Image 1 (cartoon, one colour):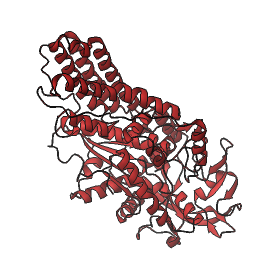
Image 2 (cartoon, rainbow, N blue to C red; image 1 turned 60 degrees about the vertical axis):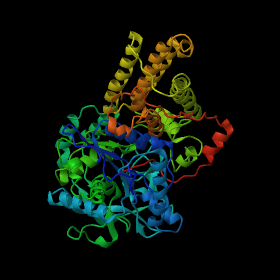
Image 3 (spheres, helix red, strand yellow; image 1 turned 90 degrees about the vertical axis):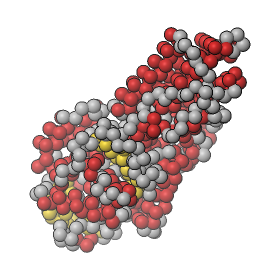
Amino acid sequence: MSGRDQAGPNDDRAERPERRHVLVAVAWPYANGSLHLGHLAGAYLPADIFARYHRIAGNRVLMVSGSDGHGTPITVRAEQESTTPRAIVERFHPEFLRYWDELGISFDLFTTTLTENHAATTQEVLRGLHENGLLEARTTLQPFDPVALRFLPDRYVEGTCPRCGSDGARGDQCDACGATLDPIDLVDPRSKLTGATPEQRETEHFFFLLPKLEERMIAWLESRQGWRPHVINWALGFVREGFHDRAITRDIDWGVALPDDVTLTGAEGKRIYVWFDAVIGYLSASREWAQRSGDPEAWRAWWEDPAAESYYFIGKDNVPFHAVFWPAQLMGSGTFNLPTNVPANQYVTFKGAKASKSRGVGRSLLDYLEVYQPDALRYAVAAHLPEQADVDLTEEDMVRRINDELSAAWGNLVNRVFAMTAKNFDGIVPDPGELADVDRALLATIDAVLVDGAAALEAVELRRALRLALSGAQEVNAYLNELEPWRTAKTDRARTATTLNTALQAISGLVVAFAPFTPFSSATIHGWLGLGGTLEDGGWRRPDVPVGSRLGDAVPLFARVELAEPETQAADVASEALTSDSAEG
């Protein structure tokens, strides 16, 4: 289902030759449990902020993602509940759609990996690798549960990490140190199904011959500019250590089937590995969006035009899949664009523990939406985005940001200026007359906030862009405190008109600066200013508020948030028993 009502991204706007095509690809969450603030901060809110900026700037944005229906955590939960994987996905996918609707996460399409379109696209990519000599069928040893009498996918095997010694490492990855693993690497491995020690038995699988792409991958990664240090360093280090062939099929009956013309022995009991098929969802979702838009070939503008840009928003545990494996799949299978940037965020922690569904760390988004207004929650999380390092998030920090910054510095500014204009000029935008240096300086400051904010957003430095917007609000408050229009209203009506008009013009610019972060309240203020149309119509600039226009009746924008009792917060966190780790493609 789509998260946006329009038929296509910005389709109602006139074509302009300078408009860029920007693909915003967002991590696919496993549809096996509720999401938490770590997911929101790690991928979904940053992607939406970035997409909203580009739409306002006039670019053609396509923002896609969906529920990953083939992840092993889904089959694990289905077996625990004696139900089917599809039933699990159908339970949580609507909940995800509710998040996006209530939080204003503006997907052009949020679909699932269970569609026929996704299966066909995945098979097409696999077939392309096969035709290009990058797949090889091999008989290999795989873990087999002697009690359950079945082969075990990687995530059905747990044990001790051979790199860092952490217990609870999975057969594909250690969350503690980030190492990419195979089940055979684990120390003291055990089956998640029965607890038995897995045996190694022969089975046939396709392997992706990654070493054949090693030189191309290194050259491409070394050419990347503007990538976050932890992303590029990890990716280059991973490839330079030596690429290894990697299995892309597994013994399981849930997932995308092999194409009829590329088969294996016992193919009826094998499926394409979820690590391989989930990232292909970005391409399949783009194609699905194009079909829904009425122009089935429209997706090509984002995937085949060399001038198009693509940004992948993920958490840092997904770096290997998006900065290494997915580019390799694209390189090896066709002529699709490689990622422009992979601005992976670090972790959000709560009292030092990583947010995790399976470990019950961090309350669900629905819990937070019962307490916080959507824009308030967006603001509080955006102010703490873990762009360069892990961020420990506390309820106290969130409440302080909302009450002292969003409400006091920005919301109160809007209300006081509108109230003074209503009181002194009957809600009509007054004629400013000749501006003084102090007035021109304020407007120049706001214009600079937009210029610098655009540069920060282009570089995916979202926290810096938010700080700039807040600093602009603080400058307007300082301007009002210096000129005191509530005092000059009694002695100098002309000066008061100039002050309030200048403040309204400054607010119109700040509405644009805040819009990617707080879309609901920004749209409300835009309407109160009587500017007409939408923020996307006006571009990334300060719109002029016409003299003589009537302002809307402003009401308080943001409710004050009261901090819950500490023991209640702790109980809430401890009581959560969610079911999978952070969103992974």
